[in-house]
Image (cartoon, rainbow, N blue to C red):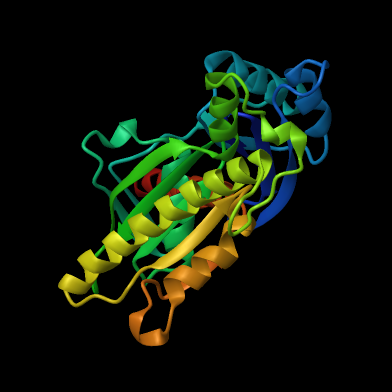
Length: 292
């Protein structure tokens, strides 16, 4: 049985296929607005094979985009989509991913579904560590998850800031003469920029890397006060690899003074979290049915 898993962002749709045991087969993705063909038609064509029996997804997109995706799932496989939102807590069990995660957001359901499912996947892979999950997409989000021995993991809070492209775009729109370097392609990160393109690219890069580093160091200091080891930093999203070297250099330091236990690139965290959540809820529903 094939399940269709969806991660619907602000600029793209990503998907994967999974079996009922949450074994994932990563698919592909498409830009939402970079094509004249209607979104529903493009997706329906892509989802013809394999023909899914169920669909689960999380979304931060607008209602019109979600309706087009729902139409595509109906046209391709005759199925509806179960949209998964953030929860007050998650509990899942199974080979390799038994975990409990508590959502300490003031209003848990207000948390972005993509952020929540990325944390589920991160905690499943690193179940015994405190984590900082930094995802660099349209927005840059940074989540702090505290793990104490013999307790559930707790999402204690996180930050949201404009992503790299939004920072570039805001400079171009808000000033008279600064270029949008997303389209110039000449700027690069250098130690001492001596031209405008390099100055913009370097400034935005430092804003992103510096923000992540600040959150990590503050969280690590908080953990250290309670005698806890430093967190692991997970980098996700389209800009993750460009940030890796700088963050490793600044955060790892020497072993004695390291602010993190490690820095790891993680692809498709949201899709992996959706798969785990779908599996957990399917198992729970079947168990409840059997107990009647």
